[in-house]
Length: 562
Figure 1: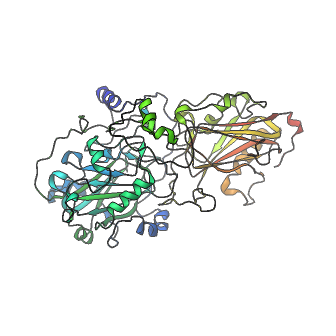
Figure 2: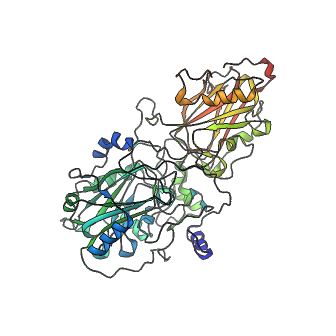
Figure 3: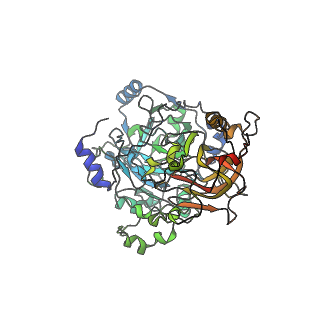
């Protein structure tokens, strides 16, 4: 879609976005489309969906039928349906668990989703939709929408429309939708937004704030607010396709049973399983009361045809508690008149506003992985947003495109859980990259630095680093053998390469250099010679740099472990 320069300037002026002309390297091949109900992970986690919401959900509806664009348009025209989830009719977001990359308000725009390849902001790539962080804590993301307040909701909901446009490696893999009729509740506060904690303040400031998320306590409070409100599921947990142009729009027609269960609806709850992005949500039904649609102008005064990002408060997007304080916000020039809540702490202290380059300090051993010394990025499991050769550049990453970032794992569970023994996410899902050292570490690896610079909402939850020794005069053959020994083949007997641990699976934080030294006991097998390293990230995400230090030596001293 072509955008005029005026629209582009408007986007920049509204959200204070940073323009970066460096485009991220994209994976040339499209990911296979996930058919509705055809993803095995949907079946595997369907039982989790039954207990995902603390709201009172009645029954289990059948899967709605997906229809063509013409079929939906005919239904809309013949039944006189309107989109109740439209900002132009007064629909608005009451609550969203996370709005790191893009606010939930974008779901309600009437305009088609837009995409500008070289438009970036402090949180990352600018996306026109609701996009949450890669979840690094237990749970899943969700939001509550008030339907067309001008008509006081919908009656006879007939169809749903969900568009993942432009969310190709970061779409929500599964969603479900529930509706409730709160108009008949005895509590008069349900007639406005007061029943949902924080909703009134959100509406007053013009919507959500990009770069923020709710705390666990706020999410618990919101869960209590929606509990017992008679929610019914009209779209059970359903797999969505990535946002490629020819297949991004999902159009579902409700069957008679689902329509009868949702005769009147004033609110919608949309659940992501577990996280990701969606460009637009449309809920087609009949208005309860005939009204004249309100102006298409958004609350910040802009036309309802562009990406809505009311404010940019990147200074609140850290995990360091000190930056959460009003004093710290004021010092960085952030408006605190109606302060938004920063992202929930993820149990790791990281001060990306004052990013420290520990790698700049003098160190007795060289950075053997550096491309300046001949290091190379050989292979990886996924390169949707970057290539492994970026990891070994001697410079510091200038943006997320200057690193290695994988697509969100399509098989991630519907609801993340933690392993009670390790405290890490309870998953074996991973991506990996193999790097060749420019100079071999004959006397072992003495220091490892894993840098998540710029990766604030999409850093890996944890990382493991392994090494192997595969020197030979037939360099190409050894590199091929090393790359063939991927993590999924380890222990299968299909590869002779013997990988050994250098750094066990270790938790990461955002936008920081994580330093591990042999002298501090952080590195295992630190005395073994190493020619290649394999970096495994859990479950997915991005790294800016990987720096491997050790003693350079004559390769004649090395003995292959192949």
